[in-house]
Amino acid sequence: MTHRLALIGFGTVGQALTEILQDKKEELLMGEGLDVQITAVADPIKGCLYHPEGLDTGELLRQVEERGNLDQYPDSPGLERGWDSFRTIRESNADTVIEVSYTDGKTGQPAIDHCKAAFESGKNVVMTNKGPVALAYRELSLLAECHGVRWGFEGTVMSGTPTLRLARSALRGNEITRIRGIFNGTTNFILARMEDGIPFGEALVEAQKQGIAEADPTSDMDGTDVLFKVLILSQVVLGVPLDRDQVECRGIRSLSGTEVQRARQGGKRWKLLGQLQREGKRVTASVQPVLLPLSDPLAGVTGTMNAVTYQCDLAGPVTLVGAGAGRKETGYALLSDLLHMVKGHP
Ligand SMILES: NC(=O)c1ccc[n+]([C@@H]2O[C@H](COP(=O)([O-])OP(=O)(O)OC[C@H]3O[C@@H](n4cnc5c(N)ncnc54)[C@H](OP(=O)(O)O)[C@@H]3O)[C@@H](O)[C@H]2O)c1
Image 1 (tube, rainbow, N blue to C red):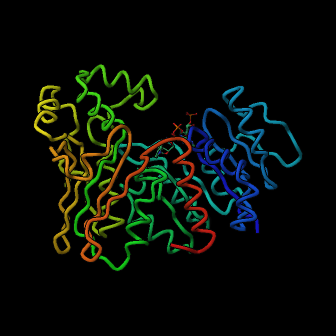
Image 2 (cartoon, rainbow, N blue to C red; image 1 turned 180 degrees about the vertical axis):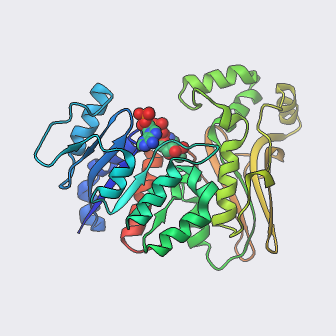
Image 3 (tube, helix red, strand yellow; image 1 turned 90 degrees about the horizontal axis):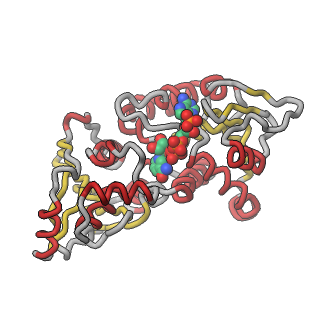
């Protein structure tokens, strides 16, 4: 059976998913029985297109690569142009909305309203946008349940590295009492460069030149990006909602190059950690630089890599290391959610 998608946002991750679906079309059909069709794309600058019988993925990618927008996508009978994101969500024939618009660090909008519109229209949502999961998890998961649809957001923490699914599925039966992790590749890269003697400012510029850091690096540097992941882990893995003002949050700007190098000389390493500790029904959490001995598995995670350690009552500490961002990796996170959803797996 064909599964139809509407992409809300056609930036890096939306295009990556389109490319994966195109490149793996045969494998997904033969190996997984998944026949996916993109019927709508809505992006405020690149353009909005809807065709109930499906859009041509090769043409979508070609247009956006060559022109930066979808204005010259060829006309055909039944093609609609210019619908906005909400009309696309409500009126397209998509089974699942792929929400890959930007993450708003203050309000989570318009992504939260995109999710509500999708659930109320009987559509599933799969997303990598952290805002709605960090800020409106309870309300949105109840709404999805009430409308009998599913909500996938694996890529919101450590992108294609299956962090949430490991805890919720593979480690089922354990009580997870503590979570510690490196959840931001940009700051991890900068700390490694500072260990090499490069000043913070120069390391940041280097990260920007390599496409690792965003042009506006504020949410990475001040710890907000990790804070959102901590809020998601608390709610989704530990089952305890936290407000952002309950989490002590400090980024890496407070660390001096001297401190970082002194740690290295003393056989230790600074890492920006997201940490959560559960005691009964209470969770305490923080985001801050922490000095780790080299024997800690998280100390060996360098460059842009991310990692999480789940402290389990039965399995003991379980550490997962992998990419925390990236075009293909994050596109894969969406595919992984789609496969689980279509097969009825958690
Ligand atoms: N890239 C990664 O490695 C990664 C990893 C994990 C999670 N994420 C999350 O995944 C999401 C997508 O990331 P990305 O890297 O693809 O970002 P991106 O390249 O900036 O793409 C976001 C797209 O959303 C569009 N957009 C903005 N407002 C919109 C609206 N109201 N309705 C529909 N589309 C809208 C933007 O349009 P214009 O630019 O045309 O205005 C842009 O094309 C973000 O929430 C991000 O935080 C990304």
